[in-house]
Image (cartoon, rainbow, N blue to C red; front, side):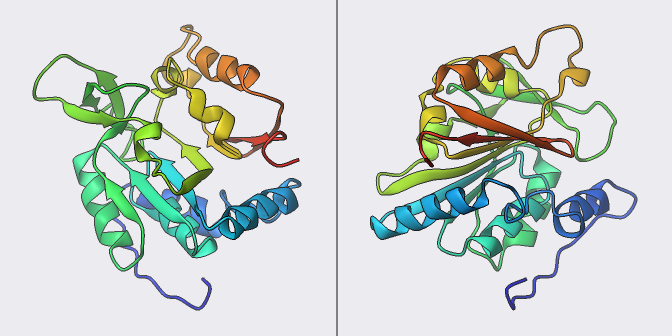
Amino acid sequence: MNGKRYDIALRANSTDFKVFSHVFIHGAYNLENMYFWPRLKQRHDSILREGLTPLIIDCGANIGASPLFFSLKFPDARVVAVEPEASNFALLSRNVGPSRVETIQKAIHSRVSRVSIDDPRMGAWAFQTRETTDSAGLDTVTIPQLIREKERAFVIKIDIEGFESELFEENIEWVAKAPLIILELHDNLRPFTGNSTNFLRAMLRYGARDFQIRGENIFSFSNDICP
């Protein structure tokens, strides 16, 4: 892509090839063919004209395919990849190593806390996080903590296997500042709990937003930030 070549490692007999195919072959995060692309591109360019940096946060970055894709598509952006599970994080770090992608082995959350990681035996793309009081748990990080002074949120991608309910539970003012939120919902992993409710409330609370569904993802586009 863009004249650059990266070697991406994939584990045999895993879900890694499906992740790679999802991102690079099927173009799950290719925004240029979305109807809102011209306005989103204008917002990207206006951030740069202000002398600021567009920020892309990939929550649930898995093996690094999606953050690498974003870094190639938006070379002027800062791309942060957040992945909690150790084996995925190791491969993520290897795959984005030559790029500008920053990696963080923590779980994204609405507050500073700790989580444990559960394996539902559905493959390496399906690890789930659960809040815990165990001191051995993994630290969390919030989206506001990742936004630096001279940056502006640009794209927030979220694929965290059901933990989106906790992410949108509180401290969600950042939603109003995010031109594009890309989210995969997982009500099927937490059936009959209203797992998407906090996300839906957050979308209604902060301004007018358009929604487009493509594949497994919901694209939530801010009409206020990108008029």
